Length: 205
Ligand SMILES: C[S@@+](CC[C@H](N)C(=O)[O-])C[C@H]1O[C@@H](n2cnc3c(N)ncnc32)[C@H](O)[C@@H]1O
Image (cartoon, rainbow, N blue to C red; front, side):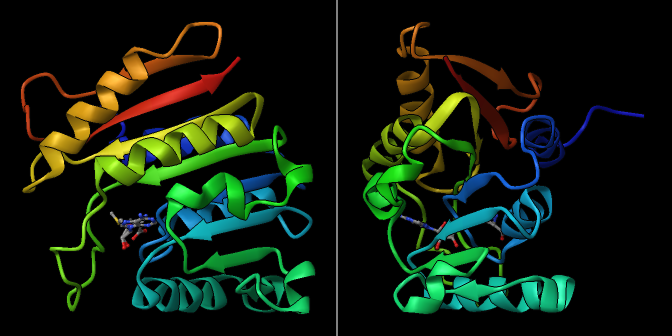
């Protein structure tokens, strides 16, 4: 049967904690797999905030969301007045600005933040554009600041590509150093393959 993949395990942990109407965050939208999953978990009355620094990623995600959810999904870039009604807000911003980008009333009320690090998994993508510890760590700080008590952050790490190992080590050290009174940190990793993707989850106290 085998164990769940890291992505499926991240979805399982998030699904157990997100309710219809919740506000949630996809910190690395990419092609929108997690954005769609979060939109379905939070429902029409919930809100998903999605971050990516590549316009092509947000366009792919928007296409995926519209195909899967059709009229049930309202998308906005968060800049115009229609942003107030949108249940998915795709932001062309770095996740390092996560806390600053979310409305103040939502601070401490976010149910889940998902990170899927690395590069955009698309045929045309520039695999040189990767997430980096220098922005990922501030983003994790931001995630912990906006999560509600009992809220979860999932981080899928890719030590196998160039630069991925250094980022994964930095993230792992940062998470391991968190005081237990701030968050509980767990790791899900295949022990026989050191370069396989793995996941860290944080539950805010
Ligand atoms: C592994 S992909 C995410 C995969 C995504 N979950 C999917 O379904 O395709 C990582 C994404 O992070 C984005 N990224 C890189 N640096 C970023 C940053 N500072 N802030 C937000 N997104 C970033 C990349 O552009 C890329 O699309």
